[in-house]
Each structure stands twice: as structure tokens, then as C-alpha cells.
Amino acid sequence: MRNRIRHAGQFGTMHSRSRRQFLTTCSGIGVGIGALAAGNNLWSGGSFWFGTDAWGKVPADQEAAYWLRGTGTAYRGSVVRMVTENTAPSAVIAALAKEEFTPETGIEVAIELLPLERVLQKIGMDITHGAALYDLYYLDQSWIARFADHTEDPRELYTGNAELAMPGYDMADFLPQLVDGISMYRNKMVGVPFDIPVFIMLYRRDLLDRLGLEVPVTLPEYLAVIDEIHRAMAPRLYGTTGQMKAGHYSLTCEWTAWLWGHGGSIFDSDGLFSANDDRGIEGLAYLSELRKRMPPHVDSWTWDGQSQSLLQGLAGVTLTWGEIFPLLDDPRQSRMAGLFDTAPPPRPVALRKPEQCGFGEIPNIGHQGGSALALSRLSANKEAAWLFLQWATSADVQTRACLLGGGGSPTRASVFDDVRIKEAAGVQAGTTRHFDSVRWTIENAMGSEPAFPAWPEIANGAIPRELGRYFAGEYDRPEAALNVIQREADRLAAPYRG
View (spheres, rainbow, N blue to C red):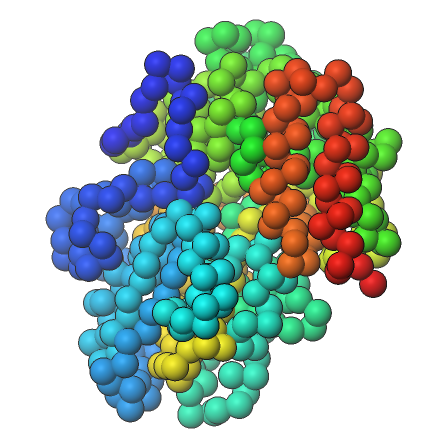
């Protein structure tokens, strides 16, 4: 893999980067598609495969181009500013904007690509100071409640001005589970679903065949298969791997899947922390068993370290973000190409119903980390920004972003069904052969975090900090760590109950 991160302790000191961070090998996003086709590889953690042949296979929607040409010229000279996480889909859309959107409309688009935590900081400053530096915000699903009052409802924008409504945009095409889990807060649509990292199972088919193992379907089977691989192969490779860096949000993501999968929840229906009940303790004990079958340095890895460990062939089975899979299948960047297959997550032992939880939490094992693209209420260029937002989240652009940028943005039903997507379902750069597992998980097993303004502080603070201490051996019992989290979580959640 180009520019692989190396360290004497394997991945022990990896920076706290975005889960899909890019190399800074070009001067901003000003590099055009022509330069990208010449060989620049921006994506250090995913399969970002610009090339002349690739672009030819995914031509632009000419009806959309005609609409842009006729509608956008009224806003010629406007500048739409967007802040977003450094993701492959975001970079594809930025490049496409320069090649297509701006030439058709005369509207300039300035997209700032940053690590996830920097995006949160920038949006917070924009709103706090009323600066209106950005027209469009990339909102991680965990931030939706925090910024809900500071964005325009896209449903109102779409129906409020027919002249600016993109033909064929079809908001009903977005998968309803994603609209509910990513975009909605208290009956307001905060933004449009933009991308959807979601946990699916990745497994080494060759190892399972060699050891005579079946793809696990239940949580007990999942641990048993991992144990068999680990006993047969460690320390050359381990049963599983993880994203368990102490103090980092990635550990919160890792933990929630097993909490939910054992019938637990983060909050109960009264808005009180409940992950220290019997179900929660069982879920943390299960994660502890998985941890024993992971590489030694996993406690210092975020999603980046986890993906690198898979690329290195260090693990047999794991539950992780589906967007990692195209990187594994890219023969130019991975020696694992064709060795991994995907499946839906293992079936939970039990599930708590959403109505038994607080703050809109939806327990299920397929943890989702999706995002929405939202229009700021502070924007002075709302019409131009709305045109761009529709174009960037249209079925055609989403399809091309999936094919050209690593498959992270299939939020529409029509994208999954697109013939171009199905034709790319082979062992290749830009593969979509994991999309069936992704869609099944979204529609049947997707878990969503609680939604209230203080949740990011808990998800990035008490939970990964105290869980990190637990895995470092500072607590002798799982409930001791969970009880400390409870005190802080209940204090921060108190203003939002009821």
C-alpha cells in the first residue's frame, strides 16, 4: 500500500485521524480530475481510484447538467463554502464540482477537507460566533441534535421553491432507516443523508475453508470461530482485530455493537444511563473476550489502525465499517485482494426495543456512523448552496462517488440498484461486492446512537476514557468502569430529559 504508516510497534502511535483521511499530496482540493487521472492517489485509508477509464465508465447525468445550466446561472459568481470530513466521497464530489458543477452554473465551490474532530470544531465556532464562514456543514450522526437548530430543513427547501427543485431528485429514494438514523431530530430533517459507514462482518474465506469453519451467524458462533482461528494461527495472525484506542470515539463505536448485541442500551426510557445493567456488563465481558484474541497493539488503534491490520493480514474475522472493504479488494494497495468476503453482522443474543431506550437510541449490532449534509441557517448564499447540495446528493453523483471514491456513500435505494454499481461487484479497485451486506445491515440490523446536544461530549469523553482504563487493567470489574461512566453521563444528559 502506498505511503503505509509504519511504526516499530506496528500501529501503536497512529495519529487520531479521520477514519478515511487523505494524504496532503496536492495543494488543497484545487487539483482537478485531469491531475488526479495522471496518478495522484489522495486516499491513504481507502480505495480512491481516479483514472481516465474509470471516469469514462461513469458519465455525468446530462439531464442534471441541463438543469444546472438553466437554473444555476442566476447565481453565477456566488461562492458556496462547505466544511467536511476528509472522506473519499467528499474528495470525489469536490473534484466533480470543479469539473462539472462550476462550469455549468458559474457557482464556485470551496470545500475544506479536515479530520472529523476539526470539522466539529469549525462548525461550533461558525455557530458560536455567527460568522457564516460556511454555507454547508458535514454533520456526523452524533452531532445532529447539537446543530439541529442551526440548519434549514431540506424538505421545506425542496417544496418551498419549485424552480430550485432538482428534477428527479426524489427525497423518498433515501433509505428510510438512514433518514431516521442520520437526518432526523424531533421531527425536523436536519440535513440530507450523505454517507453511511456501517458495521458489517469481514472474514477471510481462505482461513475458514482451511480450518473447516462456517461463517458465523450468531454471537456465540462469532466468538467460537474467532477462537478457532486464533488458536490455530496466533501469533502469525489473530482471530480478530478492533478499534480500541483509549479515549477515542472509535472505542465507543466498538463497544456499542456488543452492548446492543447483548440486549443492552446506553440510556433507558427515562434518559438514565443503563449500560451498567446485567445486559451491559455481559456486552462488555464479550468485548473483553474478543480483546484477548486481537493483536497486542489494538488498544492504540482507531479505525485506521484496524484497517491497516486487516491490510497486513493480521486478523481472520472482524465487525467493522463496510467502507474499509474496497481497500482490501484493491490489488494495487492490498495483498488481501480477493481473500476477504463480507456478511451481515452476527445475530444479537437479545435486542432492547427503541421505546425502552432514551434520546432516540436504536439498539442493534450494525453500528452506523453516517453523516448528513446540511445547509446553515447563517448562509448568505442559500439558493446557490441548495442547488449544490441537491446536485452533490443526487443519485447520479452518489453513484459515481461510490464507484470512484471507495463505496462510502450509498444512501439511496437507486444507488444500490444502479447497473453501474452491480457491474463493479468484482475483486477490483472500487469494488461494490460488499454492498449487499451493507444494504441488508442498514435495512435489518442498523444501530444508532442517542441524539441530544451533550451526547458528543459523552461519546468522546467518559465512555472511551473509562473503557480505556478498564482494558488497561485499572478496574478489576467491568461494572466499576461503567458506574463511573454512569455518573458523568447522567449529569450531562440531565438537562435534556423529558
